[in-house]
Image (cartoon, rainbow, N blue to C red; front, top):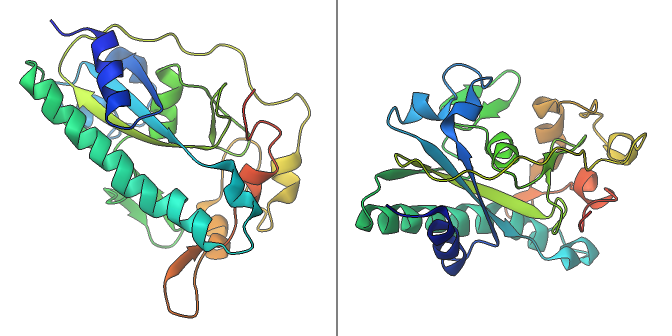
Length: 226
């Protein structure tokens, strides 16, 4: 039987900076339809992978570098890691399927501009011990702060899970992300996706979609680690 340590080593060889594992029973509080077993009934373990972002992107006067690493890099690199990890698992007797790191969504509310992935990657990462979700609704990892993007794999094997982080990583009383949000989308618990999307995602002069705002990530005292 394949071991969790082997899975983590392979994920990192494929390009992941972090890898954590959560047993499927931890997802009982997830909304119906968005639990791992709703996507893949044979799922026994959720393998979560992450790739870090280069901190210098906040120093750029252009928004193109941040747009590239937060969108294009996430989709291409993390989805490739997930697919290749699934193939490697299959070669070792484990059936697995990749979770899209972004689109396509199964759920989309066009009025509220609210989307949901087939499972919540940040909640999966929290359950897999990779960090805690902060007031800006981003996952905060102890080593890399909130400068990470996430992907996942659903596997039918009982892999040894990691322990979730118990302590909170947000500083008590801190409101930097809430006060810095130009669209007022944050309340410390959730994000109003309509307000956020309408302000953040807009085309440049060529018509290419650019990520114009990353203030909640940039101003966080935990952006580079805890």
